Image: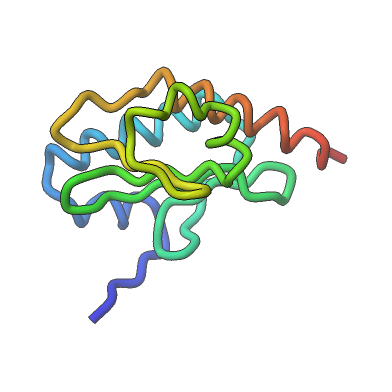
Length: 120
């Protein structure tokens, strides 16, 4: 049966301690780069919105952390993300390698600038 989450803490709490630590650091990286973003659960994963628009999402899987910065965020950092498995709006950071928190910070900052167009 599929789990349903109402908070990011609830979501993170379902993973082993070592994965929880990574998820908390990803979360902190996003919050630091986008302090005005609203945190929620969307598509049953942690999600952030800014100015009413999606900013980024992340999720844990068996062997990787999925990071979703919409197609524009990934396109802008295509070269930096070239060593990772990608989809049009997603990237997989393997759990057995160092998570690129600085890159996540840069991608989030880029998405914040994109979303500023919607600021009222």
